[in-house]
Length: 309
Image (cartoon, rainbow, N blue to C red; front, side):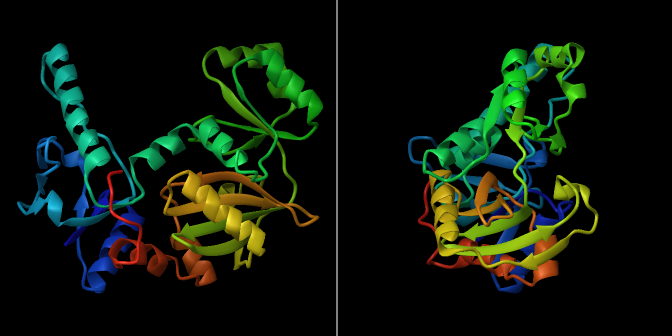
């Protein structure tokens, strides 16, 4: 049985996991969608769910022989190079349509699957689902209504703003962002505005039922802006570990990195959950068994039950 790594060798995490699995004797291969359809072939029978991959090196892997997929990076499909624009548009959509049908329906253990990936693409819905569990989240407004943004900022003297879907780091919301001229940019894209939660950053890795935490000490508002933050293992209160597992389940994440803030008075606040977190830097600094925890989900029979993404 084969484990497929959705991604390619140019990604450090994909390469690390593939090498680790092979080192444990597992059959592991890349499933790099950038090769589809020119170098990667797929056949799929929707009625039976059967099919196969012909990988760029020529190996054929039947769907029935795939035990698990690690969703590291989905690159989509390359745009068709057909000279006719209409034909190129149809060809690209056809390739994407087949590939994503397989990502949705391939009957194996997904770490993580299509619905979890889609949830991360709609972060306001993700935050709403977690808040519905009773998990503490920051006061938030998401939108492109300038009056609503101003009203929120007036009610919360210290705020941050960030993109709705991601792609840039959080920044302090200042008076400069609240001018009429700047707020007109909301006509191009909405924004997420949140109360700034004071305290320390905590990253929690959830692997099935296992919870591994670390605290990140940095002067930067977004620790990703700090080239050398201090990261130490951190034992979470049992209640917080419990709601991290519940949040992961609600978002259909069997492997996730959850970002929290721990306030000076010891409260924990949920910020977001990533379906394919980077973990090598955290593992190096803390010696937490993150690689082993992820690998166990992919190759051990006690992992999540198989099923479509």
